[in-house]
Structure formats: structure tokens, C-alpha cells
Length: 117
Image (cartoon, rainbow, N blue to C red; front, top):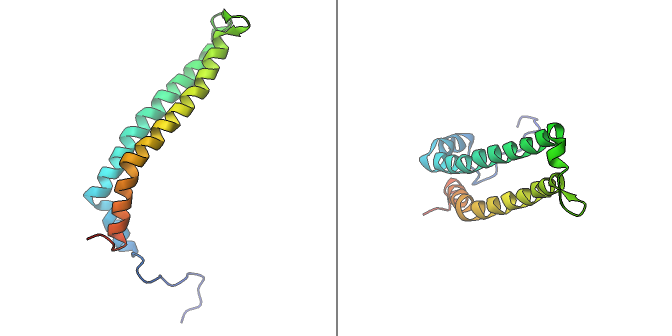
């Protein structure tokens, strides 16, 4: 037996070829495409929102300093809005992943591990 640090493959574990075949399968491609159709637009929208906030803070001091109520100004409201949108995006993603991504990923994993019908 060769002396290596690589442990022997456990019984029932998929081989590298099986992983590559599953990666090329229509089910996996659809899963990846669904994830990308959600993540990329959501990330782009948030980055645009964040960049707008930074640019307003850097170049629109008068606008950001407009008092809305008491000592609360537009800049503070937009800053708090950043936190709110971060939590909302996280909640929407968790819901999307639980309903759409996770069941499909579990089915792919079960098929790969030989537990599917």
C-alpha cells in the first residue's frame, strides 16, 4: 500500500467522474442557472444602491444634510435604509433558497449518492 496522506475513498462516495457527470447534467445546470438569475441581479441592484449612497455622501453634502425631522437628515435615513435593505435581501434570499434551491440541491445530492429512485 502506498504511503500517502490521501485517505481511501469511502464506500458509497461518488467518484470524481460521477461529480463531473452530475455537474454536466441538465438538473445541475438548471439549479446553477436559477441561483445565478437570482443572485446576480440582486447583487447588482444592491451595489448600485450602495454606490449611490457613497457618491451622495461624497459629492452631495447639501442634499444629505437636509433635515427631515429634528436632527435626522437625509444621509442618516439613507444609511439606515442600507441596513434595512441588507436584512430584506437576506430574508428574500433565505426564502428563495429554502423554496427553490435547497430542494433541487437535495434531489441532486440524493441522486449522486445513490438514494434516488
